[in-house]
Image (cartoon, rainbow, N blue to C red; front, side, top):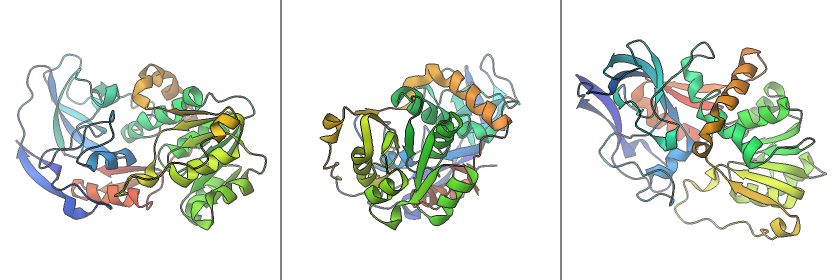
Length: 343
């Protein structure tokens, strides 16, 4: 049997381009003992993948993608076609981390992506399979623990969420809103700002292109904020440090503003505000909070079933278009979760 897979053929310098990838047809081995063959249906595009398109990524993060080989450890959902692993049978809906290919042989119990990508059944009575890459999957866990554990969300908090029209940000903004908080969102276009206000029901929103981010944030939250959910870094982080009230908290899950930079980016110039105002800055990764996944998933699935959670997806058809989907997402040309429909 043969299968198609997207391979990285050159590490990009600056912006990612189609010339960095190819689609290869490879021989697919039959599943061995403890393995399953999965027909992939949807595969993910996430901002953090850009860090793995470097020859050497950030210390402590996931490994860089190798050249001229399958791009392993990308979250995916699909259907089991053949199984030699106990507990899995043909027809089972599963999630795993061997995406950006149409078929994958996956070993049961083999940890991947810190545990979030280990082969697992998905309960399609909770939500359709593709939602397990977004609204009730790892994105949900990131948004939920970022607010509840990293930012220690408290009654009466005013919350600012950057990249609030994205896969994680749109969930974080709505979780905070559904829990009764005042929520400000920022995004990168007038259409996304309307989405934040009209569909997500946020209290205020702004387009960060409209002026200095600090000025825009002060206009949206003149009395300051208590929590900043950070996926952007850079000038957004600097603006948050200036706007946070005493004992404010920052939950940092990304820094997309610097992912495609060819040179190291400077940090905020007002970091002393953390000392002056007793602030807490906490970086976090969802894989460190797997024990919280069932609770997060129940809450988000409940909101989704009740029709209280709006969750857009930008779906790009065809495995061969996965690089284009990633490029669109990094350029800010997608809303919500970016997915590739493999088959």
